[in-house]
Length: 244
Image (cartoon, rainbow, N blue to C red; front, side, top):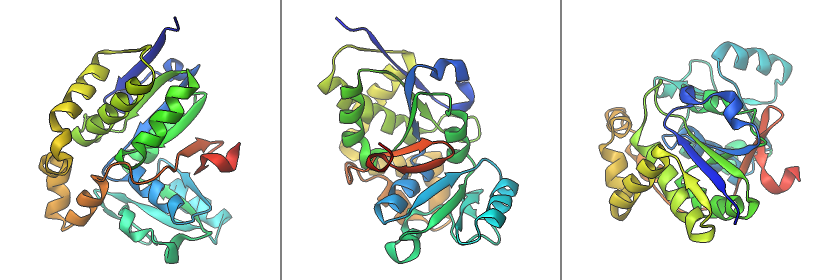
């Protein structure tokens, strides 16, 4: 019998980089970075370069003048950027065959902090079933890294982690969860009948509502919408089949 670990961390700040070695990492930021990345790739973006700081994004733009700048601080578009962090902005007309330099308060930092893993997958509710199938077939130790919010856990990321865990365990029983893995699974099972309501009621959901971004919440609550599996490798994100 194979013994495999499936660890979930409520924020990226809680992960020791050495813990990622030898595992596949899954980075989740439901509201909204990982949904935006998945959507951009689904709509034909060439690649996405996640960077932790605005200054780095501007420097990279000088080197790649044709690339779009996307991201947020405080949930709002950064001054001078082409795009914010709403997945609804990343339409085919805007992003097809374009590179995107991307920085957000939590998601882009979580991705960069997870780079020591053998593979880094970008996840949300939208690609959870397809990703779980890929991960279960890998028979690798798994580390799910919830981006959280400025060092604090977030309900929406916990729910997505739980959804991914449920799907993985349906395919491969030999994964052993850590405590927060069990918490994530339990939280998802308690709320799976109405994910949108749970996410809308969360602190981040309430914040987006106040900013008149309720459409983003609805979009980011949709489950199993795509089979795209974005992979972060060598500093950029592209769709899995393109980097084999």
